[in-house]
Image 1 (cartoon, rainbow, N blue to C red):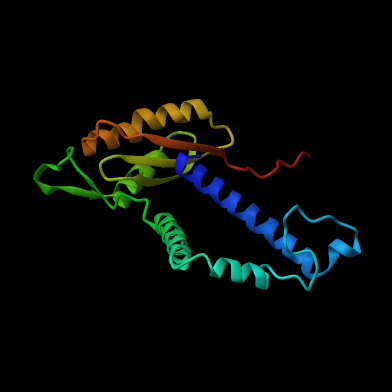
Image 2: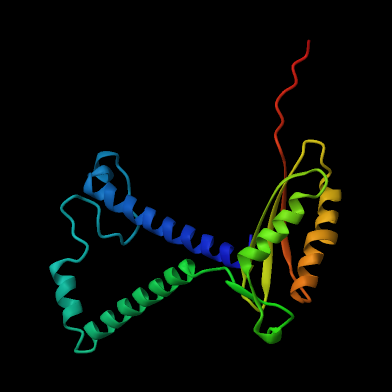
Length: 202
């Protein structure tokens, strides 16, 4: 798990817990479950019966009399929160693929560039031909200046993970670095064993 995905999952989990807790508290009040089951709402929680409101008339009058700066400040804070949420959403939807890679270093020699899909397909084809490898899937991620390789290898039932990993590093990945001129091409490799049908004993 990358730091970015860990942060995203943590933020989503925290937001989900807050929304779930608030929704349950409001639901309990709306259905009158506090009184029906003798439950005690959290201290200071304004909603405990179906007739309660979040802001009473006195509260609305008190907040309205704070001065001319109050509502502009509230609107600015809400707008800032909405912009931050929108920026975070756009960051999640942004493409995490480099698109094209410079060949021969940065900047590319003579303007030659290679599409990330072509490089991924080339690595997958060479990796799929390795001994005891049944299937290979490769995706290029990251930025054009710092690409990363995500490899998923499916080994035959008799395949040795250590040998397959060594062959991958010494074969397709080294070829990719040499062909593109990249000094460093980090790789995230996932290995799995193909399922084989059960043998019938007679």
